[in-house]
Length: 124
Image (cartoon, rainbow, N blue to C red; front, top):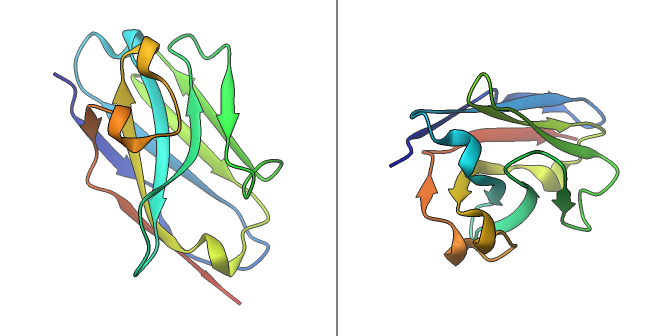
């Protein structure tokens, strides 16, 4: 069982930056691959980024590639999403999620545990 709590969301102007954090409970955090997803009003929840259990490989949606960076610190049971050059279309509730390494992917149905989400609003 893994419990996830996101933080770091807020209001930022276009072109600005935010860093989201996702703190996980439990001693098995390092055995999970982690992902970030987002959901804008009226839209389906979609993939943003993912990272393997070791942090050795990362994956990004095309819309955020080159602007967002996912990372993790297994000693702190935390995964991060550094978001730079933010755009109004990045406005959404951002969720972190955990899955077993062999299920890592872009499909949210592959993820077993979810946080409650944190709001990111980018003003133009």
